[in-house]
Image (cartoon, rainbow, N blue to C red):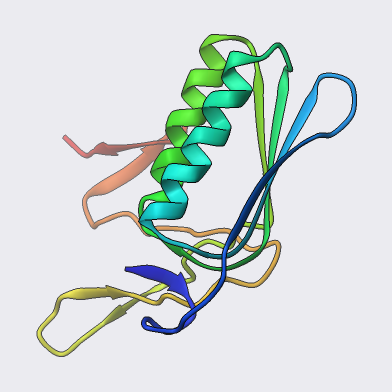
Length: 139
């Protein structure tokens, strides 16, 4: 499943790594990010980890659609970099805008990108309240 364009749309992808100043590494993503492209991104990230640069920036501003597993890959990368006191920056990746309900009650994510500068907010279920940024059950 992909975010963005309709499934079945053929698109060209590009993944490139560049030195972006002293201590910085840039990975540029373009087009459709599918499973094969995720593997290529992971290889570029491994190359960054093998080096001495401190800041990894991933520019996804020209990504047309992406595989559901891309956010998980970025999360794992952030964790790996954090344990080494390195920094991950991601530019231009659009989140899922909202969840649409279908008649049978199952949730179907809206795959269109959210407007720039927006945030995804998930409402808490009844009986739960937020404490210090964490949802906690009323007791």
